[in-house]
Every structure is written in C-alpha cells, then in structure tokens.
Image (cartoon, rainbow, N blue to C red; front, top):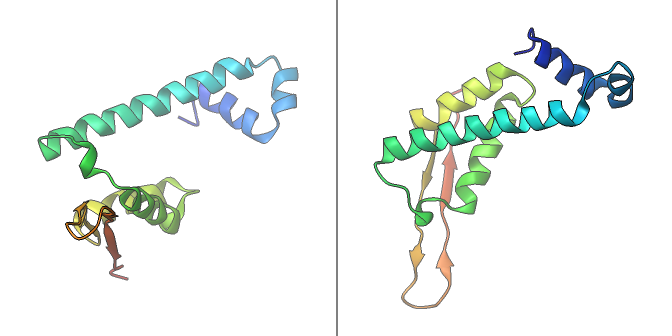
Length: 122
C-alpha cells in the first residue's frame, strides 16, 4: 500500500497536512478513502469471524475481550506490520485466551464480566 500513489499521499498527509494541501493533494478525499479501506477490512474480518463461529450474537462480545485484543496488538508492536501479524497469530493460537463468564448472576442483577488470561510463550 505504501508504494502506491494513494499510500504516498497518506504518508504525506501524515507527515504534514498543510504541505500536502499545498502540493495539491485532496486531503478530505484521501482520508475518506482510508476510512473506507479500514471499514472494508473490518467488515471482512467480521464476516470471517461469523463464518468461524457459525453465529454472531451480542453476548459473544464483551468490553474486556476487545480491550484484551487491543492490548495484545499494542504490546506486539502497533507501529509495525509484523507486530500486528504476531498479535493476529497469538490470539487464535491460544496464547491469549479469553474465558467468558458472561451471564446474569442469579444472586444479583449485575452482569459478570469476561476474564482475560494472556501468557506469552516468550
């Protein structure tokens, strides 16, 4: 992506938005295109997740599960593609698991949360 014209424009906008505008780059268009690409990738990931789990329900997604995934990506290295790939391999491989204890507690009206257990093999 970085070697394409759009990738170069994105990098230029990231470095200096005013200079990119002075160079004639349509900043709003490039930002909207980047948002569209990210949304498309997120949609594809959702479709693949639904295919893997055979069903999608609101109860399957807890706040702590999402925070665990973000933490794993951040710790693996958010600034590099290799860090995101490593994090993407860690979660499904079981090195970072989330045990969901979600459900209504019969003793109270509070909802119990998911417990995350990340253990790195390194």
